[in-house]
Length: 328
Image (cartoon, rainbow, N blue to C red; front, side):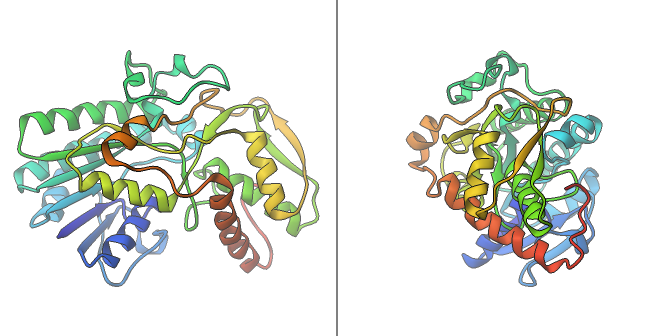
């Protein structure tokens, strides 16, 4: 099969590319970033640096492709999406133009990477909420900016699936983490940020890390290998979505810190920053539908994934002799 991975220079896109190549597929990779800034780059794929917000560019790259996997968007952790709402909203151009190009070029399948940020915020006001089911996205009240862009793009995918011959798949990701992801600079998610902060403290004999909020906000986190497996399983299925791809193992930020402290064998004090962006108070995935439709559930629990992530970040930070990072 001929695959196009849009946003292949990103964290999930890079891992999906590697798995498709292992399976023997012909893979074209596209990302707006210069090649030097791709998280992973594989010499066995065709690699293109191109802006997919442009319709002409989309038509060029999807010609002759069987399956498009659209991971391309402007996103990051809660700080980034709170402080860059315009940039997040403009990602709607990528999905819009890719759908139009796929229909015109007669692509067989199209996958859109949505987010748990589409869920109704009023259902996420406490830390101990039950897992979110797919129907909980409506009535619509997603996170401002990023969440609205993803929910609107989901609707566009739905109608292209209904009105054209394009077979469209939609997944809602819940906090994917693992090696080769960003861990510094402002776009990182909390597992990588906590690993980085504790490693920085350990390498420099410090006894304190900064924590956004009071640490009682909850999330669930999915290891990247499980994410890739579920994504490809969805693409190769008869189900269209939207469907949760996440973990049901809900933990607070304080509990996440405790787990990383155990892995690192290093204890730190917590300095709580109450004025920083927090997002919703609680969120985790309900996997009832994906178990039923795809027979899938995660293989990794949180501690197993954190061990692999911590070791990778530790190696990367240890390579930097001066330990210079933008935010300890």
